[in-house]
Length: 131
Image (cartoon, rainbow, N blue to C red):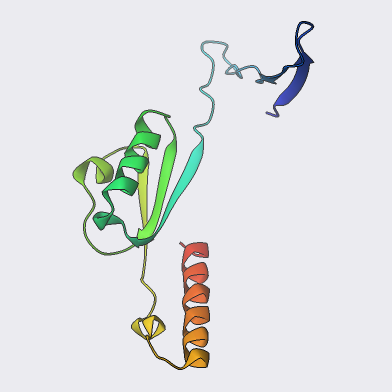
């Protein structure tokens, strides 16, 4: 299931054309019909309330419908997303908890603010990794 890319140069110009060679579609053992290739999967990561982001919801729907991809949406739990997103068969919602409120400090003490921001990033990385 590997892809090979070959390069060709046109004789009339210095343009380079890359050709992607796709592997042949596997046939079932009984020989009836070819098995469909596995659907490619993408992730849409939103470090915010997905329900309040119509642009990101549109991106998820567009990738799932137009590009025919399986889409995993990783976002904070919050406002409900549009019905078109939640009911789409190619879209899976993976909701994560938002960072603790104390990491959103607006303290004027720079060391305290740096520690809070570092803890916020660590919390986000941990949440995304285990979602």
